[in-house]
Every structure is written in structure tokens, then in C-alpha cells.
Image (cartoon, rainbow, N blue to C red; front, side, top):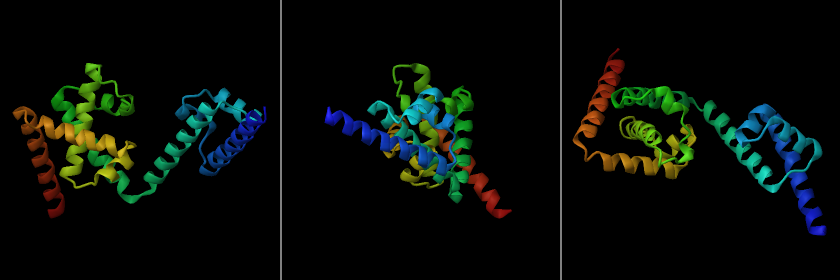
Length: 192
């Protein structure tokens, strides 16, 4: 019994800290709950009673950390530029691969639904856009991971996957054509 009480006290303190940080960051309870995969009522009940299952507390901690990281990333000057370049590459590649750019952006890359052919197609567009942002615009892998909300390992695996696909002459030609388009656009922008 004492161990259970000790655990509940720890969880209670953690919940209070989560709530304090949420308010300090100006994040709504709805946003935090949704990011943690909880209903708002579950969140309110957990905070109000200062009790929740350990798994729920871990989900809230992870969601708060992700939201904090995203907020930090948005304030960094190059974030908007990197997202714009990446978004441009997504749009160009999506058109060439016959998918909608909105579908690529709406897909959660963390799902890893590799058995789903549509998920794989959209992932290939995302990976190619990451590859071009990394190689053409010279954005570091770690920075890309941070801005796009991915893990560094996911970015690295995506880059490796694109390198493997460059053996396909059609895919390689597409990447070369897009690279040339971007280089020309950058050169025109520098000359103006």
C-alpha cells in the first residue's frame, strides 16, 4: 500500500507540473489533450482529481514536450523559410507523382503504416522533399528533423531510402529536374 500511495503522490506532482507548464506556454487544455490522444474531459478529470494512470501521464508529458518544441521552432528565423522550401518541394514532387500535396501534409509520418500502398506513396513524396531540402538547400538533417517534427533517425532513413531509389532512371531524372528548377529560381532571386 505505501508504494501505491508514493506512486500516486509522484503522479499528482507531475500532473500539477504539466498543468503549470501548459498555462505558462499558453497552450489550451484542448490542444494538449488532443495531442496526447485524450479527450478534454479526461484531461480535466486527471488534473482536477490529481490522479491518472502512469501511461496517461507519460502521454501528457510527451505531448507537452512536442508542443513546447514546436513553439520553440516557430520562433527561430529560418523555420519559416525551411518549411516553405520543403512545402514547395512537396508540391512539385506530389504533382509529378500524381498525389495531392495536402494529402502528404495531412499524413502522420509517425504512423509507419508501411503495409498501406497509399501511405508509402505519400511517404515517398515526403522523403524526396526532405532529400532535396537537405541536398539542394543544404539544411542539416538535425535541423530538418526539428522543423518537421520528425526524429533524426526518421530523416536519416528517408534520405537513405531516396538514395536507394535514385537507381531508378525516371526517379533520378525527376530529382535532377527539380534540383535544376530550384537552382535556376535561386539564381534569378539573387540577380534581382
